[in-house]
Image (cartoon, rainbow, N blue to C red):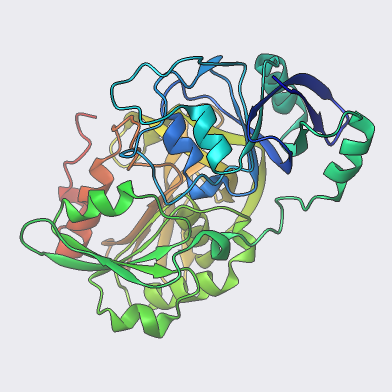
Amino acid sequence: MRPAILVLEDGRTFHGESFGAEGETFGEAVFSTGMTGYQETLTDPSYRRQVVVMTAPHVGNTGINDEDPESRRIWVSGYVVRDPARVSSSWRAARSLDDELREQGVVGISGIDTRALTRHLRERGAMRVGISSTETDPARLRERVLEAAPMTGADLAGEVTTEATYVVPARGEKRFTVAALDLGIKAMTPAMLVQRGIEVHVMPAGSTLDEVLAVQPDGVFFSNGPGDPASATGEIEVLRGVLERKIPYFGICFGNQLFGRALGFGTYKLKYGHRGINQPVMDRTTGKVEVTAHNHGFAVDAPRETGTTTPYGEATVSHVCLNDDVVEGLELRDAGGALTAFSVQYHPEAAAGPHDAAYLFDRFVDLMDGVPAEAHTHGEDA
């Protein structure tokens, strides 16, 4: 295999072998702790402009199939693995992981100490990185790394969103219509909604409030997505218009961060973020702990122990991460205490699992159906 190098912006260098496409790539170095679901990770638009380091040492054993992609393409800027599988052993595999990376032009590196790299990112924080199988001088590669744009301030939702609105029909009897803003939506999200009798209108990130209201939605949904939530000023204004009209709202990941900013809270960049499928979160509304899937580098800065009065009602933190106390969910109630909007930072749709938090889609249905929040029983046995 062709030699390759990985150089972080602080100069730390790793030597390995080319994996996937040959060439050169740049992005933000982040690590994912999931042991399964690499195909869903690769095709998650939230990874736009990021180089993903897999902490699981052996990657690629189930190959690539045509059923599990979460979007139309691979979005990661680069891929880092320690020990790629030589053979795909799943009956569902249509091709190897290496072949898919080559086909889509994704530059990667293998054969490096991913444990050492992960520890470095935990200690120093996520940072810019370059991978090259054409450059042999780490110093010259680092110069180009330092020229790459940082993630802070990046407005990326427009790069991954749908070009035009499309409709996913409800499965069975239609109960509700939802306008879903595609900030980097994954295929499993509409699938979870339509299973519950919801007709989903998936709309471009730059849609106006008038365009959202033209759908005559029973509820509005904001998806996951890449970039700095502080940059999404247009989407935040649309959301404020939704909240003013008391249209039921549900947001996931980026949709949680934009909900926080719409309510008047700040957001900040985490040192190295949460990425993987094994993160413990407590739903404070039920007292239950869920194992959840995450992919975020930013978080909402909101008081955890007290409510906050906003122009749209009383906002409280509904979920917290049990690893580091990061805010993982918000809810909004009106003057009478009724739930009007909520969001979570993690991924309840989690195509690769776990499915502890799938009840949140039922909570959204109950919200649109006018069921009081206190009557929610979903998640009691999670």
